[in-house]
Amino acid sequence: MSMQKPSTADRTMAGDVIARSRRSPIEEEASLLALEARYCAHGDSVHHAEPPKIFDHCEGSYLYDIEGRQFLDLQMWHSAVNFGYANRRLNDALQRQLNRLPQIASQYLHRERIELAAWLARRAEAGWGERGRVHFNLGGSQAVADALKLVRNARGKAPVFAFAGSYHGRALGRTRVDLDRPHLVPFPSPGRRPRGMSKEEHGEECLKQFTRLLETECGGARDERAEARYAAFFVEPIQSAGHVIPPRNFFRELKTILDRHQILLVVDEIQMGVYRTGKLWSIEHFGVTPDILVFGKAITNGLNHLSGIWAREKLISPEVFPPGSASSNFASNPLGTAVALETVRMLDEVDFGESVMLKGAYFLKGLEELKRRYAIICDVDGLGLALRMEICAEDGFTPGKAMVERMVEEGLKGDLEAEGKRHGLVLEVGGPEKNVIALAPALTISYEEIGLALKLLDRLLHRVTRR
Ligand SMILES: Cc1ncc(COP(=O)(O)O)c(C=O)c1O
Image (cartoon, rainbow, N blue to C red; front, side):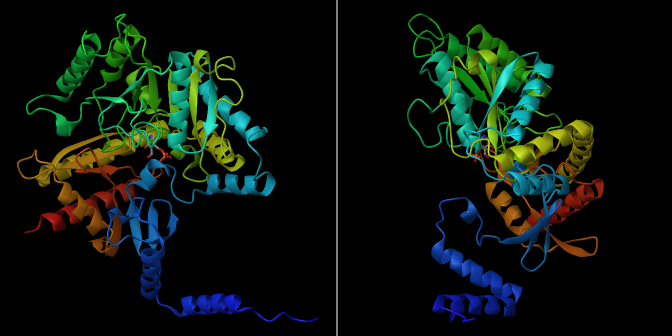
C-alpha cells in the first residue's frame, strides 16, 4: 500500500498542534490574542473590554479560562443560559437529536417543532384564556421583525411605540430610520426619576405623559380622524438593559390606555422570559395579556438557537398569516426545537417559580446589605433572579459609569480572594447610563454560590472604593 507524502499545509498544521501542546497556557493565550488582533473584525461587543477575555470551558455557574481559573458568572450569556452551563439534561436532549434527526429543511415538519408549539400555545390558553399560534425563527431580532409583520398585517404601515431604554434588537429602530424606528415613551427607571419622587409616582407620571401624547390634537399621536396613528406598543416588562423593574400596577394601567386607543401590546420576553423573574413570562407578574409575545434565548439554554412569537388567533390565523409570510432557512431547526421541548418538559417537572423567587429574595437581601455599606451603590432591586445594583458618585445621583467599567475589568482579572481561593467574577454592564451591574445568575445557582457571589462583590467594591 502506498502512502501519500504529507503536503506542506499538513506539515504546518501538525507542527502547529505540537507547538500548541508545548506552549504554556499564558503563551497560548497571548498567541490567540495576537491572532485575534490581526484577523478578527471588531464590529461586535468583544472589544468593549480591553484586553478581551478568552474562556476555555464551562460548568454550572462557572466559566474557566485557559489557565484553569474559575469565574463565577453573574450574567449567564445575558440570560441565555438560565439553566446553567453544560446542563446535563438539556445537553443530552441535543445529543439525542443530533443522533436521530439533526437536519431538516424548514418546509418539512418534525415532531419536536409541533409539540413545542402546542406546549407554548396551550400554556397561553391556560394562563390567559386566549387561543393562539406559535411561529418560530432563529434569533431575537428576527422574531421581533416577525412580530412587526403581524402588526403591519393587522394595522397597516402605522408606526409603533417602545419605551426609552428598552432593547428589541436590530429589527426595531436600532439601525433603521424608517417606520421601524419607534416613538420612544419614558419608562420609570431609577436613574431618570426626579429627586424626591417615589417609584410609583414616577410610573404614574410616565403614563400621564403618554396619555397626554395620545390625546394632543396637534403634533400628537392622533390622525385627522382623531384616532391613534400608532399600531402597537413594544415593551419589555423588565428592561433587560439595567434590569429596570416598573411598579406592579404599571402595565395594567398602560394596557387600559392601549385598549382605549386600539393599540396592540407586543411583549418582548427574549431576555426576561423562561423563569428569569420567577414566572415563565415576566409579564405574568403584571396581570395583563399580550396580543403578541416574543421569546428566544433561554428557551434552548443558549444551545442551538431558536426564537419565536406567540400571537392571538386573530393576528396569526392562516387567513391573515398565510404560507410564506415569514420563512427562513433555519427557523424551527430540529436541534433548537428538541432542546426547547426538553426545556419546557423540565419546567413541567421542576418548580422554578418558587425556587427562583426564594433565591432572588436571598440575593437581594445581600445586595441591600452591601448598599448600606457602600455609598456608591445608589439603588438595588430585583424580581426573581433579575437583579440590579446601580452605581453613582458620592452625591448618590450622578451615574458612576467609569466605576462600573472598573468593576467589570477587576472581576475579569480572576484574583478576588474568598474562602481561601482566588476567583473571578463575570459581570454585565447595563442601564441607559451604563452605570448598572445587571445581575442574572443561573437559576440553578445554589445558596452557597449566592453567598460566594455576595462575598466577591464585597471584595470588588472594597477594592474599587479604596483610596
Ligand atoms: C429583550 C431583547 N430583545 C431582542 C433582542 C435581540 O436578540 P438577538 O440578539 O438574538 O437578535 C435581545 C438580545 O439581547 C433582547 O435582550
